[in-house]
Length: 81
Image (cartoon, rainbow, N blue to C red):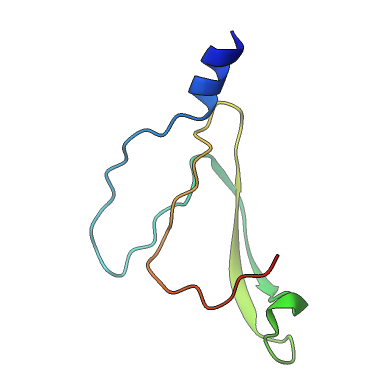
């Protein structure tokens, strides 16, 4: 039973996404629970902290696919742990 649950929980189905350069797709299955404008965290050294960015929160249940995808192309400039 545990093996079947792990296979179900960590499944990675094939997704067909539109191929348009100006499109942003959802990074996860689930329910969009909030779209907010928030200040960047201090850890990102974004200057005076007044720059606002859009945060999209997605709620995943145990029945959703828990694989995170890349929603847009870009370059990672900094990684903070």
